[in-house]
Image 1 (cartoon, helix red, strand yellow):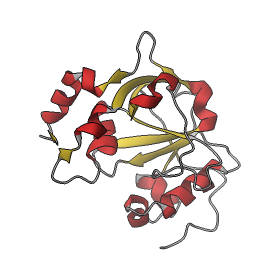
Image 2 (cartoon, one colour; image 1 turned 45 degrees about the vertical axis):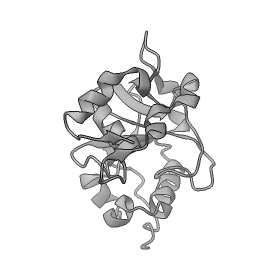
Image 3 (cartoon, one colour; image 1 turned 180 degrees about the vertical axis):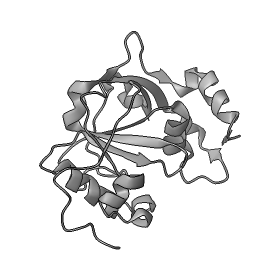
Image 4 (cartoon, helix red, strand yellow; image 1 turned 120 degrees about the vertical axis):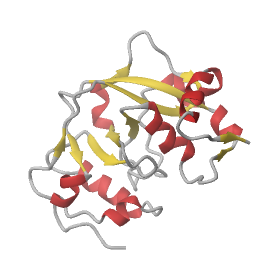
Length: 196
Protein backbone atom coordinates (compact mmCIF):
# COMPACT_ATOMS: atom_id res chain seq x y z
CA UNK A 1 0.00 0.00 0.00
CA UNK A 2 1.27 3.45 -0.93
CA UNK A 3 1.07 5.79 2.04
CA UNK A 4 -0.57 9.18 2.27
CA UNK A 5 1.42 12.31 1.44
CA UNK A 6 3.51 13.55 4.38
CA UNK A 7 1.31 16.63 4.65
CA UNK A 8 -1.64 18.36 3.03
CA UNK A 9 -1.86 22.00 1.94
CA UNK A 10 -3.14 24.56 4.44
CA UNK A 11 -6.08 25.26 2.12
CA UNK A 12 -7.86 22.04 1.21
CA UNK A 13 -9.78 21.67 -2.09
CA UNK A 14 -13.48 22.03 -1.31
CA UNK A 15 -16.60 20.71 -3.03
CA UNK A 16 -19.68 22.92 -2.94
CA UNK A 17 -23.17 21.47 -3.27
CA UNK A 18 -26.04 23.63 -4.50
CA UNK A 19 -28.58 21.14 -3.13
CA UNK A 20 -29.75 20.80 0.47
CA UNK A 21 -31.69 17.49 0.39
CA UNK A 22 -29.67 14.28 0.69
CA UNK A 23 -30.43 10.62 1.32
CA UNK A 24 -28.97 7.79 3.29
CA UNK A 25 -29.77 4.19 4.12
CA UNK A 26 -29.28 3.08 7.70
CA UNK A 27 -29.94 -0.04 9.70
CA UNK A 28 -33.56 0.06 10.83
CA UNK A 29 -32.37 -0.77 14.34
CA UNK A 30 -30.76 2.70 14.51
CA UNK A 31 -33.34 4.66 12.49
CA UNK A 32 -34.85 6.37 15.55
CA UNK A 33 -31.49 8.06 16.26
CA UNK A 34 -31.03 9.51 12.76
CA UNK A 35 -29.11 11.43 11.71
CA UNK A 36 -26.71 9.00 13.32
CA UNK A 37 -22.97 9.57 13.42
CA UNK A 38 -21.31 6.30 14.39
CA UNK A 39 -17.71 5.46 15.23
CA UNK A 40 -17.85 1.88 13.95
CA UNK A 41 -14.35 1.70 12.47
CA UNK A 42 -15.54 -0.78 9.83
CA UNK A 43 -16.58 1.31 6.83
CA UNK A 44 -14.54 2.96 4.09
CA UNK A 45 -13.98 6.42 5.61
CA UNK A 46 -14.57 5.60 9.27
CA UNK A 47 -12.09 6.71 11.88
CA UNK A 48 -9.49 3.92 12.11
CA UNK A 49 -9.17 4.50 15.87
CA UNK A 50 -12.88 5.26 16.41
CA UNK A 51 -12.02 8.76 17.65
CA UNK A 52 -14.87 10.39 15.67
CA UNK A 53 -18.20 9.34 14.21
CA UNK A 54 -19.19 9.45 10.56
CA UNK A 55 -22.41 9.64 8.57
CA UNK A 56 -22.62 8.59 4.90
CA UNK A 57 -25.11 10.10 2.46
CA UNK A 58 -25.61 10.98 -1.19
CA UNK A 59 -27.55 13.38 -3.35
CA UNK A 60 -29.83 10.63 -4.66
CA UNK A 61 -31.34 7.44 -3.31
CA UNK A 62 -29.88 5.31 -6.11
CA UNK A 63 -26.31 6.10 -5.06
CA UNK A 64 -27.16 5.28 -1.43
CA UNK A 65 -28.65 1.99 -2.55
CA UNK A 66 -25.57 1.06 -4.58
CA UNK A 67 -23.18 2.07 -1.79
CA UNK A 68 -25.13 0.34 0.98
CA UNK A 69 -27.09 -2.57 -0.49
CA UNK A 70 -25.69 -3.61 -3.90
CA UNK A 71 -21.99 -3.11 -3.02
CA UNK A 72 -19.81 -6.08 -4.06
CA UNK A 73 -22.65 -8.22 -5.38
CA UNK A 74 -22.10 -8.47 -9.15
CA UNK A 75 -24.80 -11.16 -9.39
CA UNK A 76 -27.28 -8.60 -7.94
CA UNK A 77 -28.56 -11.18 -5.44
CA UNK A 78 -29.28 -9.40 -2.18
CA UNK A 79 -30.06 -11.30 1.02
CA UNK A 80 -33.60 -10.42 2.07
CA UNK A 81 -32.46 -9.99 5.67
CA UNK A 82 -29.96 -7.30 4.62
CA UNK A 83 -32.59 -5.46 2.57
CA UNK A 84 -35.44 -5.83 5.06
CA UNK A 85 -33.37 -4.52 7.98
CA UNK A 86 -32.59 -1.17 6.31
CA UNK A 87 -34.39 2.16 6.29
CA UNK A 88 -34.27 5.13 3.94
CA UNK A 89 -33.67 8.55 5.46
CA UNK A 90 -34.11 11.97 3.88
CA UNK A 91 -31.77 14.61 5.29
CA UNK A 92 -31.65 18.38 5.14
CA UNK A 93 -28.10 19.76 5.14
CA UNK A 94 -27.00 23.35 5.58
CA UNK A 95 -24.52 23.04 2.71
CA UNK A 96 -23.62 26.73 2.90
CA UNK A 97 -21.97 26.10 6.28
CA UNK A 98 -20.38 22.72 5.51
CA UNK A 99 -16.72 22.65 4.49
CA UNK A 100 -16.46 19.46 2.42
CA UNK A 101 -13.09 18.33 1.08
CA UNK A 102 -13.13 17.14 -2.53
CA UNK A 103 -11.23 13.86 -2.74
CA UNK A 104 -12.30 13.27 -6.33
CA UNK A 105 -11.24 14.86 -9.63
CA UNK A 106 -8.93 17.85 -9.27
CA UNK A 107 -9.19 17.65 -5.48
CA UNK A 108 -7.67 14.17 -5.46
CA UNK A 109 -4.82 15.43 -7.67
CA UNK A 110 -4.23 18.49 -5.46
CA UNK A 111 -3.98 16.23 -2.42
CA UNK A 112 -1.79 13.71 -4.34
CA UNK A 113 -4.08 10.82 -3.44
CA UNK A 114 -3.64 7.27 -4.68
CA UNK A 115 -6.96 6.67 -6.47
CA UNK A 116 -6.44 2.90 -6.70
CA UNK A 117 -6.01 2.68 -2.92
CA UNK A 118 -8.90 5.08 -2.38
CA UNK A 119 -11.30 2.88 -4.36
CA UNK A 120 -9.92 -0.49 -3.26
CA UNK A 121 -11.52 -3.07 -1.01
CA UNK A 122 -8.90 -2.63 1.73
CA UNK A 123 -10.00 0.29 3.90
CA UNK A 124 -6.62 0.99 5.52
CA UNK A 125 -5.76 3.84 3.12
CA UNK A 126 -9.20 5.53 3.00
CA UNK A 127 -9.53 5.36 6.79
CA UNK A 128 -6.06 6.87 7.24
CA UNK A 129 -7.10 9.62 4.81
CA UNK A 130 -10.32 10.26 6.75
CA UNK A 131 -8.33 10.60 9.97
CA UNK A 132 -5.79 12.97 8.35
CA UNK A 133 -8.51 15.16 6.81
CA UNK A 134 -10.55 15.14 10.04
CA UNK A 135 -7.48 16.22 12.03
CA UNK A 136 -6.48 18.96 9.54
CA UNK A 137 -6.11 22.42 11.10
CA UNK A 138 -9.00 23.79 9.00
CA UNK A 139 -11.41 21.35 10.72
CA UNK A 140 -13.44 20.31 7.66
CA UNK A 141 -16.90 18.79 8.14
CA UNK A 142 -16.38 15.84 5.80
CA UNK A 143 -15.34 14.63 2.37
CA UNK A 144 -16.99 14.24 -1.03
CA UNK A 145 -15.86 11.19 -3.00
CA UNK A 146 -16.63 9.26 -6.17
CA UNK A 147 -18.96 6.35 -5.42
CA UNK A 148 -17.24 2.98 -5.81
CA UNK A 149 -20.45 1.33 -6.94
CA UNK A 150 -22.15 4.13 -8.92
CA UNK A 151 -19.19 5.85 -10.55
CA UNK A 152 -21.31 8.52 -12.24
CA UNK A 153 -22.22 9.84 -8.81
CA UNK A 154 -20.64 11.49 -5.81
CA UNK A 155 -21.22 10.46 -2.23
CA UNK A 156 -20.34 12.13 1.03
CA UNK A 157 -19.02 11.20 4.43
CA UNK A 158 -19.66 13.72 7.18
CA UNK A 159 -17.61 13.90 10.35
CA UNK A 160 -19.31 14.23 13.70
CA UNK A 161 -18.50 17.95 13.90
CA UNK A 162 -21.03 18.45 11.06
CA UNK A 163 -23.92 17.38 13.30
CA UNK A 164 -25.26 20.94 13.93
CA UNK A 165 -25.71 21.31 10.16
CA UNK A 166 -27.60 18.05 9.52
CA UNK A 167 -31.18 17.11 10.38
CA UNK A 168 -34.02 14.90 9.25
CA UNK A 169 -36.00 16.56 6.48
CA UNK A 170 -38.97 18.36 8.12
CA UNK A 171 -42.15 16.28 8.44
CA UNK A 172 -40.36 13.09 7.40
CA UNK A 173 -39.25 10.01 9.28
CA UNK A 174 -37.00 7.11 8.31
CA UNK A 175 -38.96 4.49 6.36
CA UNK A 176 -38.12 0.79 6.32
CA UNK A 177 -37.29 -0.45 2.81
CA UNK A 178 -39.59 -3.37 3.59
CA UNK A 179 -42.49 -0.90 3.88
CA UNK A 180 -41.59 1.20 0.84
CA UNK A 181 -41.81 -1.13 -2.14
CA UNK A 182 -41.67 1.86 -4.50
CA UNK A 183 -38.06 2.61 -3.52
CA UNK A 184 -36.85 -0.85 -4.50
CA UNK A 185 -38.97 -0.86 -7.65
CA UNK A 186 -37.41 2.43 -8.78
CA UNK A 187 -33.91 0.92 -8.41
CA UNK A 188 -35.01 -2.16 -10.38
CA UNK A 189 -35.68 0.17 -13.32
CA UNK A 190 -31.90 0.63 -13.44
CA UNK A 191 -30.53 -2.56 -11.89
CA UNK A 192 -32.69 -5.70 -11.76
CA UNK A 193 -31.58 -6.91 -8.32
CA UNK A 194 -33.10 -10.04 -6.77
CA UNK A 195 -33.91 -10.62 -3.11
CA UNK A 196 -32.90 -14.09 -1.94
